[in-house]
Length: 246
Image (tube, rainbow, N blue to C red; front, side, top):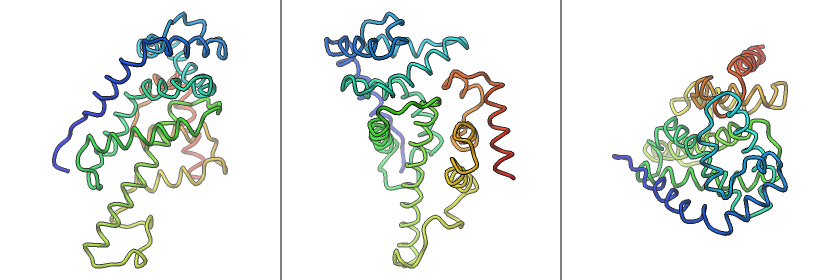
């Protein structure tokens, strides 16, 4: 990979402009408002206005409301086919952070950063649709963590396959995922968190730890994504770290 281009973001934005203001967009907002009173109370008229309202969230109270709106959209996305697309558009800034954390796929089989980001978008869409109806307190953070985890695994598999080919090894001659020169301390931490989540490590605590230590987000960035206070998030991270080291 020799250069970076992010054209899929521009394509996504252009597509969004075309669908977010039409009659189906207004119908989707109306249906969401019926299913989720918190969204109905926003007073937005279409999905474009809904995403814009989420992006304008600045104060602590606004961020709490924005996080709950994304949680509500994930929970009730079945009311209209455009709702999953709205969730995708709402988390684009977070996806850029994930792509940056993964060095835009450097070392993988992607031709450039734009191709990698297109794959990241497709992965995000698959997860959003698969999670339809789920009620997640940390919806945005859970989504970004799941996307990062899938793309990281794909990247590591590609790197391992390339190294095996360069060394003249067959696929059966090596075990993917074992600690070695392809697996960083960060990768091992991510795998450990994944393994312990729900088995001694609280899922919400794990989400915060994953967000800060693996995704590389600051507590302030997490507060903006989740609507939770920095103190609350710091306490959850500390609790997760204690459990991880127990």
